[in-house]
Amino acid sequence: ISRLKSEHDMALTQIAMDKEKEAADKYARDLTCAREDTDKAYRDILQTMKDNLVKEKNEEIQSLKEKAEEHLHMAVTEETDKFSMMKDEFEVKILEMQSAHDEEVKALESEAATLAARIQELEVVHSKELELIKNEAKSEIDAIIVRQKNDMNSATTELKVKY
Image 1 (cartoon, rainbow, N blue to C red):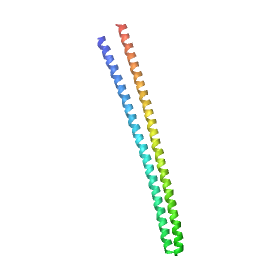
Image 2 (cartoon, rainbow, N blue to C red; image 1 turned 45 degrees about the horizontal axis):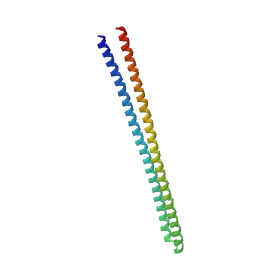
Image 3 (cartoon, rainbow, N blue to C red; image 1 turned 90 degrees about the horizontal axis):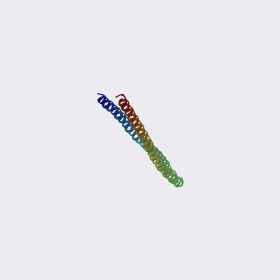
Image 4 (tube, helix red, strand yellow; image 1 turned 180 degrees about the vertical axis):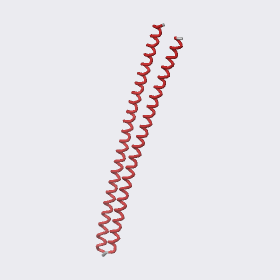
């Protein structure tokens, strides 16, 4: 009976350890999913920001081009000399706006590259954090297993001493 009781106690201890390990494994899986969701959210937010900035700048350029075309049309109706002077001025302005637009696009591309680098940095940080959490969970599981084994050994020793 005592042998059966001892085996029963060890089986209960093993079941408890298995349940704790399953809970720790589920916790690690949940953390991995959360990290992936966070990374995707960062990428989505950054992509949306980039798309909105590009769209906004393109609308501004389109608006500026439309205004320039209106001024050019008004100039055509004026005297020939004024028309020539104004036409030259508007062409210079359009070139300046295109140059400014090119610079803004380059700046946006640079910002997008910076954001992509930041995403990579965040992914590295999240990977390291996840690894630390996994290591902590494994250490906790190992400590629990050691405690359970010690408890089982103590119980076995007490049973041996009693019987």
